[in-house]
Length: 376
Length: 123
Image (cartoon, rainbow over all chains, first blue to last red; front, side, top):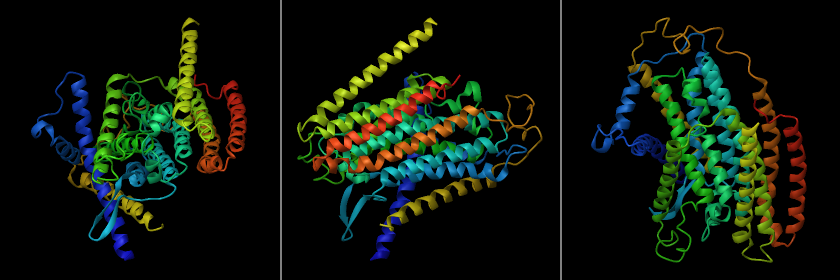
């Protein structure tokens, strides 16, 4: 019995890695087509109908490229860095629940890979490991651009990890648990993103910084740093960095969906109908897929819309705006929960209103300080 | 409980394997014609000046230290957040809320000090 269980875990882990790798391949195509659409171009549409074979063509091209290792680089670390970057990107997705459970082969099969009760801490821990790969890549390349890119990237990632961690605290506070399945089930009927809209926004900004996406793609700012920490990488080693970035995009989108957008659960108000995952289990993965797709679209959209922000602004935004605001949100959320025994709707009405007020105040203060700087 | 980490171990193993296979494929099929010019560190086409790894601005170190400080504070929040609802249901919510508010105020004093000292400036 134990062996069958072990086999089940192993198969699920393997399947998730394969799904993420395929997802990565098609996410690159998705992004290029969407960007092209937004810039009134056509985008890659030659390889296969609508360009669906483009990822394969890219992979083949990268395999046949020459791999360069710069002179005087740390050869072993240079080789290790892409692997250290890609492994946490994939492994972080292990705790995300993709659905409830179903019966097959006479046993109950759950649609999540690892149901660990410290899920949220696990995500924070693995996300921190990803910094090592980038620092190693920047440092081992023996290249000034790569080193600056690696340093900037790591400083940015650790700075935005604080609001990220505080958003996790917010969700833990509202769910009373760190187990991913409990967090999703706690959003039955009303999503955390609706209870704490500003928290969801802060989380979105933090994950954009965490995966080095536009407008926070400073480490890869072409005008200043050519390609940042992977300036010296070519061929398949470069492909691994690319893969890590896109798989991390999928993973953080799924985490955002899990924490704030109801995970695999249906839209609020549909709990007792056929559309609920309680009654139709196979809708769970479909809801999850659609929500993750919507999040990925938003990330590409942001990239197409916003210009890159200056590095000093980025750092001071993280430390002077995001951090105090997320601390305030924790107090506001806790206040809503404390008042719940007296006023049952406090977390649903008081918390969003107060957090939106805090957000408005922040925007006002920001505008003031920016206006003052322009006068000076 | 421990069995569930088997899935995570599988994922680490499979991913590392995929990464190694990708690198090996590149080494097997890619051409290898290194020249001195090619293996020079890239510096926008100029000959590189000085060593590639050089002294790091102290700002980054400062940010790292601040990060460790505040990250530990975040870690202190987590157990509190986990049991908060249980305390509320035992109608001890206000006590626990006040405790945490005190903690946040102490945290803010340190934060304001760091701000006034200019540790958060990036000029």
